Structures are given as C-alpha cells and as structure tokens.
Image 1: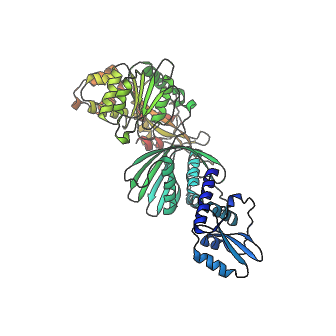
Image 2: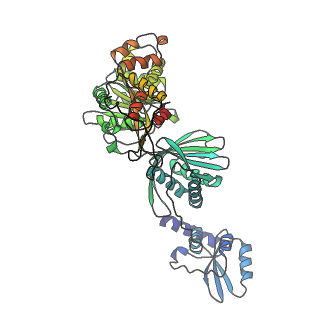
Image 3: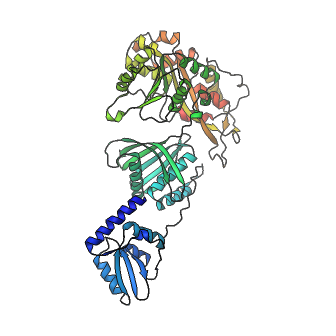
Length: 532
C-alpha cells in the first residue's frame, strides 16, 4: 500500500472512531510494535479482530477494528478482570501489519517447473501445492516466469468441475504442470481480468493484453508481456495466454533458417514494389515471426510501411503500426482503405479473415503496393484455392499474388544425444518415393549414406529435442501457374495446383521435412506429427 493510500485509510479510521465515540490509535506511527503473545491465541486474534497494543500487570490496551463487535469487547473485559481493559480503534491495514508479526507467512520455496518424459505426477503435485499457498498475483507472475524459462509459447488455463488445469505449450507440445481448486482458480482469474482489462462475468469471448511488472513475495520482479484470450466453457472460463518474447535481433531472414533457394526467392519477391505475399499456417506456426522478419528487411528510410494488426504484438521503430479492434465491429478492410490514402509503399495486414479484406489487399497489390499478410490454410495450394473461391474468376486478382508461403514448426533434435535408427523397407520405399518427386533446386548430395535419427532424453533436454525450426513450401506465381489459373474454377483443385507448383520447382512441406529429417535436424515421426 502506498503512503498516500495508508494516510487516507488512517484518516477515514480516525473519523469513524470519532463517530463511535471511541479512542483512535495510529499504528503507522508506532515504529516499534511490541508483541504480547500470552493473552490471545493467533486464531483468537483473527476471530476477534483484536490486537494487544500495550499491556502490563494492571492494564491491557486492545486495538480493535471497526468490525469488532460490542459482544467481543464485553467478553474480553470479563475475561481479563484482574487488569483494566481499554480499547482504541485501529485501521484494517494496521491490524494486518500486526498479524504479519504475530503470524508471519510461511516462506514459500518456489521450485522450477520440470517437464520430462517420466510420469510427472509428483512434480504437478508439488507445483500445485506451492500455488495453493501464494497470492493470486504471485501465481500469475510465477507461471509466466516459468513459461519464459521453458521457452513456452502459450499458457493454457482450462476450467474443470473441481477447479482448473494449467498446461504449457513447449516446442509445440502441451504439458500439464499444475492444478488449482475452484477458489484458487477464481482468484487467479480475478487478477488476470484486472490486469488484462477483461471481465470474468462476460458471456462472450474476450481479448486482453498484459504488459507490466509484478513484485513477488520473494522480492523478485517479473515482467509480464502477453496476450490473453478467454472464452466461457461449460465448466467456467478457459484462458490462453500467448507469450510475447520477440527479440529484434532475431527477426531477420538470416535467422529464419531458410535454405539458399528459399532466402533468394524471398529477397527477390520483397524487392518488387508491388504484389501480395501471404504467410500461411495454423496458430502457433511462426507466421508472425516471419512477417516481422520481412518487415525488418523492408524497414528503410526510403519506404513508408504501415501495419494493421489485431493486436499490435511487437513495436518496430520506423513503422506506423495501427491497432484494429475487430471485436468492436471494425474490419481490416475498413482501416485498409483509410491507410491507402496515406501513400504507403508497404502494407502489412495481420490476417486476411474475410472476402472484403482479401479483395482490398489484392486491389492494393495491383495498384503499386507491396502487401504482406497471413492466412489460415493447411498448405500453400489450399490457400490459393480458398482465395480463388473468395475472389471468383478474375485473372487480374490472380496476377497480383506473388508468393504464398506455408509453414509449420517442428522440434529440433539435440545433436549431443540423438542416435541413428534402422529404417524398415516400407519406410525406406516411402522416403524414396518422396525424394524422387522433388523437382526443386535443392542440394541432394548429402542423401547417399543419410540416416534417420531418434531423440535421446538428457537432463538438459528431457525429450531429446532442443528448440524449433520451420519447414516451408513456397508457391510462386510462375507463368505455368498463371496459365493454370485461367481455367474455369470448376476445373481447378488443390491437388492440381500443388502438382503444377511441384512440377515448376516448389518444394512441399513434406519434402522439406523429410530432407531435414535425413539431415538429422529432426525425426520422421515429428514430421508426421506436424503435417500428417
């Protein structure tokens, strides 16, 4: 409590004492608080809301709060007949201070959350017991701190009939770390709602943002920067907390893990002054990181760059970033048209969600702007098919598309512990079929003698993986693809578009993933888990 707030509370308490015709005692001025433990037990102190302020053989001076009853005062007077008993009103803050001295809180020993392949029921039980003892804001700070330590991308708070489960998504995989009872989960949601500016009683889904520091009971300060998404479920409110741990020095094309052909292609595309570049994939596939990396490459004094985002996840100096409150009925397309009047060279739209935004983005790309955006689809060819369905048979729109890049994040093997595995004849035949279908400009000289590997757990990396990287496919609008798109819509399909792209030199995500597995960067099982 701040000094001003404490002073205000003492003044209010003094006025209340005058109304009740009782003495007032300012505990904030009492620097040396003497404890008298022989008169009342700690449970009695809490029950009666009473503190012995001064005492000797002949006199006891009790501090009471405005909620202490007359009946309690009469009982105490009768109980201590050998002494003269007097009373003064003290503030609630003063009472809490004394109780901290009479009954100091037990020191909380925070243990780092451990995630491993072994049954971690004991770890979950220990972390749950720790969270049950601490304040709600300490719960939030500790969970976020641990999520950052484990390089988690999300924190999932999932309501149940008897409370809630807490899970962390680490390297794309969810892991249970703790459970809370209903009362503790209610407290955690209360703090979350307060700092994220959302409501715990809303009947609709909500989005909030937290960017502040928490000082934990241990004295440690934890900075919390995350986006909060909540939705009411049948058992209560579920929430997902997306962690923002962007680092500007990591946002460049060189740090995206592109092969030589992919990096050259991306640089050639964004060097053009116009066209639409789409980054495609599900939530958590690294689309935003790729977009920001492209923006950093384009961010020069010669270009005016404007972004439309819901919400703005990372602020970049030199770029005009505009938040779009889509939940309040404002669409990207509405803001898009306003932004076009500001004469931008590059426009980034956080996500194309509807037909109107798609058409506006394509029109901007046709009229001399470079437009970057994300789109939800399973592959680059599927994204193109969906776009064509949305915009209809318009060759001008199709000509505005320059690149559609689809991507997924997969876990990287720990090079220190990975081990080669024997490959069955069936899998070997399957891998050969995939490799034989590659027409892209990629180096295949490493394939003779290449092996598949498996993860081997270690203390440092309990699952045998260390970090993540993206597998990609880049669909370019080649002359062959443009010719294909002149066909009637009913003759086009995702399969035909992909076949044409592969024949023209596109490396599919499956092919990219298999090559990375054969290089020992990941496992074949991980590729199958991520893309099927």
